[in-house]
Image (cartoon, rainbow, N blue to C red; front, side):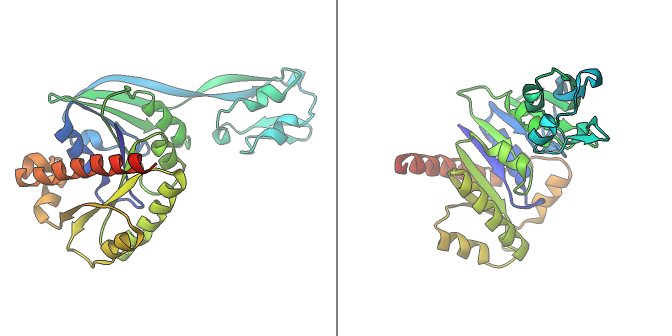
Length: 284
């Protein structure tokens, strides 16, 4: 079973939920797909075992073969190719590596070379959490491609927790594709509710089963709970507003270890996820 932990905004407690759920379910796979700012490793003490460079193919022009027909320019939807003064130009940072330009060029005036976009690291904890983290190179914008490289490490048939990037952008969609269930983490604030609605719209558009976890419950109002009830959205868990949780998190500690009384909360969450996933399958 593959479960993604997502949120409409940053700072809701998505990573905290991911690492604690992974520690509870160990042995388990944990994929940190927040490749622009991966931080799951801060809570799981383990050394890097492997670090694999991830590259993508970008076009390179062969000027003497190009007749400036413009077919490659018209094909590229990302404006990574242009003609200036009858000469072809490549904007590698805008390329998405689809390779279509090489296919439409009948003169063989385009070849590809590999350009690094980031790395994927692998760590293993003593209790059996296998963590794969993507880290995008500074200045690179190909987060979705690196997310796919992280997901390539998934082992079929094993339980996996995916820590998604915040928001509703392309890297989030890339993370959620193919998962069995999505947990949307929110907080009881006006901003939390607004961004939850955006995340719900995204998950529904993808046709994925999902439920909501309210973090820091009791620190705001009940509008998130009311919204979930009105929309028929399963409220999987409410984690109370507790200063001790914030202190443990700030010290890089797992909640279920620093505050064992919260372990049943995460056990309840996993049971609710399984139940909701089963309900969605039966209704499909």
